[in-house]
Amino acid sequence: MSFWAAGKGLSVAVLTGLWVVLAAPQAHASVTASPEGMWLVQEKDGIFSIAPCPSDSGRLCGRLVGMDYTDAEPEKDVWGRSECGLEIISDMKRRRNGRWHGRILDPRGGRTYQASMWLADADTLKLRGYLGLTIFGETQTWKRVTSPAIGERCRMKKSG
Image 1 (tube, one colour):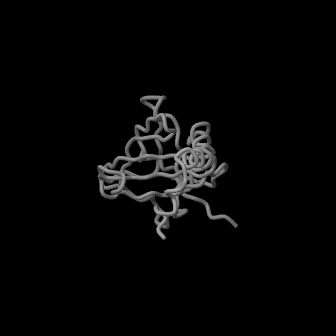
Image 2 (cartoon, rainbow, N blue to C red; image 1 turned 90 degrees about the vertical axis):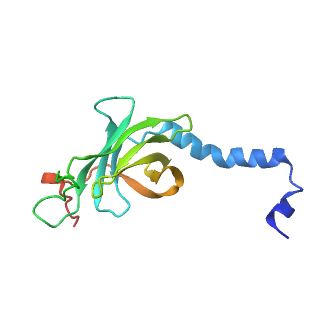
Image 3 (tube, helix red, strand yellow; image 1 turned 30 degrees about the vertical axis):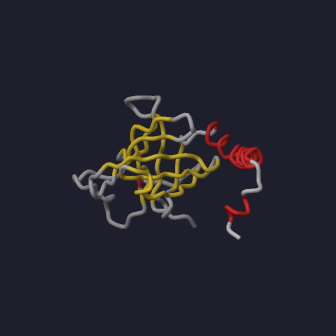
């Protein structure tokens, strides 16, 4: 018996009620909490600071403030600029659904993509970069950090 055949006996009201109960905590968390703060990227080799954009305080931007690198200088973008302090997430505007939509820069390729970000919980940020449609993208999971160990020129300090 397929899922759909088994579900025919369930009423629309029951399914709607179940959806509301399951979705409510996640929606509430994303609406009340803010993605502003410091975030450790999925690969644990970079830290971003997400804060109001300098040009528009109603939107959020993200700068790379911590990097794990071994050379004397931080990595450079495609135009030869240091990635340290580079605004990579830009123009994120909050939508009614609690998600933020804007752009993200690939510093090595120089291409800008559409992006959305949202909080899965107060300390977990989901960031999705995509080309045109969201199905043509990738989602990363970042973790909030409260006291990142960052030295000169964005160098991440190794713990213990």
